[in-house]
Length: 174
Image (cartoon, rainbow, N blue to C red; front, side):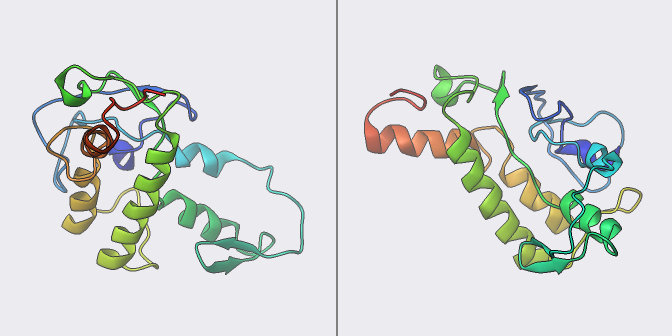
C-alpha cells in the first residue's frame, strides 16, 4: 500500500518507529523509511457500519450524504493525515523520551491540524490521495516536515524541545 508510507497500520495503537537516514520521496520504491503515522484508512473503507441517517456528514467544511456519497466520504477521510502515539523514535533531546504515550495527544492533534492546513495550502482542499497514483512532491514535503526526527521542522522533537525550553522540564514531565 503505497499511501501507508506515513500511515503505519496498527488500528490506532502505538506503532514502532522505523528510522533510517532517508526521506520520504515521491518516486520511492521498496520499504518505507518512517512508519510515523498510525491510521489505516484502507481498513476504514471496509467498514459497512455507517450510521443510517438522513443528516449530512461534514468533513472539514465539505457536506456529504451517507446514502449517496459513501465513496466520496471514504476518499476524503483517506486523504487526511492522521498522527497518533508512537514509540521507539529517536530520543527527544538525545536523552529524553522515545515514546509520546500518555503525553503527546495534544501535540499530535496540533500536528494534524497544521499538516492539514499545509496540504490545503499546497494541494488544495479538493486534493485526494489515490493509491495507484504518484503523489505531488509538495505532498511529500508536508510529510517530511512531521517525521519524528530532530531535523524535521514540525516533529515532536522540535515541539518537545521548545516545550522544554519554555517550561524548564522535559517533554512528558508533569
